[in-house]
Image (cartoon, rainbow, N blue to C red; front, side, top):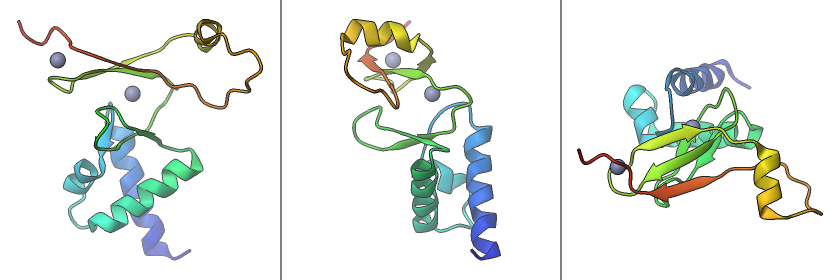
Length: 119
Ligand SMILES: [Zn+2]
Ligand SMILES: [Zn+2]
């Protein structure tokens, strides 16, 4: 692995760690304009593959990338795109799903709806 490559990796991971939430590849790119977008995408894919970063499809269109200190779930407003991060006990969710003979690796819930953004 060459040095410049790993420096870029660190920069990208740092941006994700400093963000309290999820970013798209173009958001990351906007914060690191010296890197090209392809490099950003490639590194994000590696983070996802390594399990360091979560890839989320919250609005069903653009992939978002999030560094999660703790695994959690999301509720997204389909109108204003606001994202709410919440935790819920996995055991309880599994019970609700009623899937007994299923070995769970990851459990992610995305709730879609409309928030109270109109005041
Ligand atoms: Zn909203
Ligand atoms: Zn989150």
